[in-house]
Each structure stands twice: as structure tokens, then as C-alpha cells.
Length: 225
Image (cartoon, rainbow, N blue to C red; front, side, top):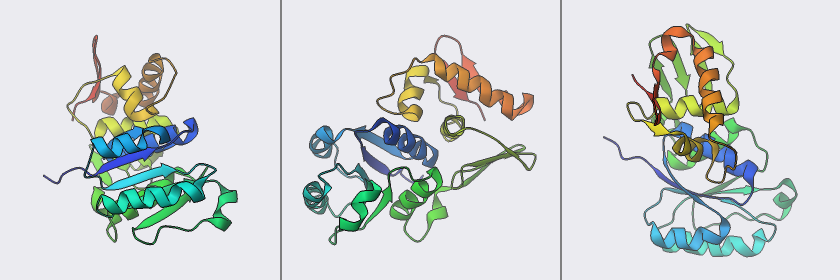
């Protein structure tokens, strides 16, 4: 069995934290997330990463060389940086490591593509992009779900929740665990939002497929294939 890719995600803004946590959960990779203040500790405590995603602060021109040095020292780990549009004219990507950037506010599809290009260079489809379960197909690359060949209109988080559970079948996750893995490491809302999203996902899947999304009383939810 192929070992899951390991990704470090560093961000200080809530919107990027939520977006990229959902993107990464759909790609079925192992994620260690934190703030910029935690970056050095995360790197020292958890070696052997496959990708670093880093939200660049306003002082990016000063921070980027330090990040590059840390990644070169750790074995030339690829880097994806998140930048604001006004930073692009003065942006110089690292030359000693494989790197790319996305603009703050980029679409989910673009963020997913950039990540896959760095994790699986030249073979972005190797992450088993399409999952088929009975009449349902989930395309992890395009964030599209269809049932009986008809597209299903999921919201951003509804899709991320479904994709995460489907790619981790047979395992029960508590509401708090789902909040961390799907909503993001610093989500401050109540855990009952998970119940609301589960109900919506079930309703959109229909009675037959929704039976796979089981409630484990007193614990949480699981996808039973």
C-alpha cells in the first residue's frame, strides 16, 4: 500500500486555513497545521515532509529566504506559498527548491491543482482522482460529485466532508475530529454544524447512498462502504 503524502500547512488567516484544510482533506494526505509562530517547532518535531504550504506575511521578502534555507536543509522539500496580489510584482520564488505560488482568494480547483503538481509532479492523476461507489462518482481533482451521471450541487464544506469520509471508510470520526480535519485547525464554531452538514449531504445523496453515511450514537459518523 502506497504511503500517504505528508503536508505541513502554515497559515495565520482563518479563510485560508478553512479553504486549504478542505482542499487537503479531499486529496487524502496527512496534514500537520499550525501558525507561522509554530513553523520552526513543527519542522523540528516532525521530519520527512513531502510539501510545505505557507501563507506569506506582508514581510514575505524577509521571511522567504529563511523558509527556503529550512527546506533545503531538510532535503529540498517543495514549497507552495500563498501570496496577496499586490505582492506578486516583487515576488522571487526560491531557486534551490521546487516551488510555486497561489494568490490569496484563488479558487479551490486552482489550489488543488497546484498542490497535486508539487506532490505528484507529471502525474497529477495518481492520487486516485475518481472514486465510484454504486451510482455515485466523486472526482477528487475537480471537486465534482455525480449520482446516476447527474451532477450534485454540493457546497464547499459539504463536498469536503463527504470526500473526507469516503476516503477514510470504516472509521468513526467524532464531531470534533471532523471539525479539525475538514473545517480547519482553528475553527471556532460549535460542533453541531457537523450534524447540519451531514443532514444536507444525506439529503443530496438520496436514500440509497445516504445509508453509507452512518451515525455512531454517542461518538460521531463513519462512511461504511
